[in-house]
Amino acid sequence: MPQWLVVSIVLSVVLTVVLNVALRLFPGAGRRIGEGIDRAIERHEPPPGGEHDRSRVRVIVPWRLMIVGSLVLTLVLNLLLVVGR
Image (cartoon, rainbow, N blue to C red):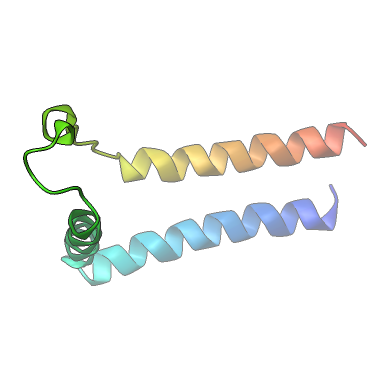
């Protein structure tokens, strides 16, 4: 297995673990980050009363699923690169 593939997989796993540990060490950090993003989005929304009010949709992002999906896609992409050589 090429060294860059091993490094890529290890870094993906390490970064995922670091992110999860950081969120565990600071329990309110995820909520505060989410609220900060919400506030930033609200500053850029059009004023109330326009046609945009009736089409507002709140999207809930499953962050754990996104992390797992990112790892899986990283592995698949790297394996495709190896097979393609």
